[in-house]
Length: 287
Ligand SMILES: Nc1ncnc2c1ncn2[C@@H]1O[C@H](COP(=O)(O)OP(=O)(O)O)[C@@H](O)[C@H]1O
Image 1 (cartoon, rainbow, N blue to C red):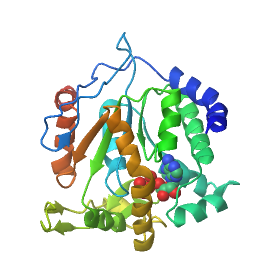
Image 2 (cartoon, helix red, strand yellow; image 1 turned 45 degrees about the vertical axis):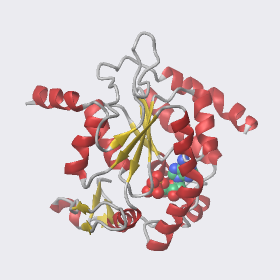
Image 3 (cartoon, rainbow, N blue to C red; image 1 turned 90 degrees about the vertical axis):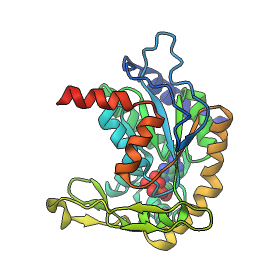
C-alpha cells in the first residue's frame, strides 16, 4: 500500500489538485430530509474561497444506474463523469498490451488490479485537464477500501452518493442493458414490474428504448450475462460494500433508494442533492 501510494501520489495529487477550479455557483447543500435519502448533510466544498468544483463519488451495485445519473449530472452541471468501467472497456477495445489480461478479469466479473485502474484514471484525468476540465463525478471508483484510502491521500472527496435498488431488479436491469455500438449511448430493453414482497418495495421501470438510428446497432456487454452479473454482485458485496461504511464514518455518505425508473427517480435525486432549483434555473435559461 505504501509503495503504491508513493508510486501514484505525485501524478495523482498534482492532477487532482490542479483540477480544482472556479465552478461552484451551484454548490448544493444536501437535503437529508428527502423521502428517498438518508445521511447527514455532507460538506460540499472545503475551499475557504468556495471556488472549486465538485468532487463526488457514485457508489452502488452493478446495474443500479450510476452511469445514467452521473452522466445526467454532467449534462446539468458540466462536472465530468468519469467511469472506471468505461476506461477499462476503452482499453479493452484498443487492443493494447493490457487487453488480453483485462478481458479475462472483466469477463469473469472480477476486479482489475489497483495499478491498472490508477493508471487508466490518471491518464483520463490528465487528458481532461488538458481540455480544461475541473472536478469530477467518479463512477465505479473507489471500489475497495484500499482504493478509497489512496484517493483520500491525494484529494478531498466532498460527497458520496450511494444508489440502491433491490437485487432481483439489479439483475434484470443488467441483463436488459444495451449499448449503441456507434454512438456509445446506453439503453435498457428490460420492462421491470417487480411486486412488493418480503418487505421489498414494488418497482416499475419502463424500458429505455433506443431511437430508430441506434436500434439496429445495439450490443450487449460481454460481462452482462447472468452468471457474470451474479458474480459481480458477489464481488460488490465482498469488496465494495465496505466502502459505503468507510464514507459513512466520514459523514459523507448520502443514501438514495431509487423509487423507480428515470422519470420518477431523477427529480427525487435532484431534490436530495438540493439541485432542484438549479435544474429549474437551467431549464428556464434555456427556454
Ligand atoms: N475501480 C475499479 N477497480 C477494479 N476493477 C474495476 C474498477 N472499475 C471497473 N473495474 C472493472 O471493470 C468492470 C466493469 O465495471 P463497471 O462498468 O463499473 O461495471 P458495473 O456495471 O458492474 O458497475 C468491473 O467488473 C471490473 O472488472
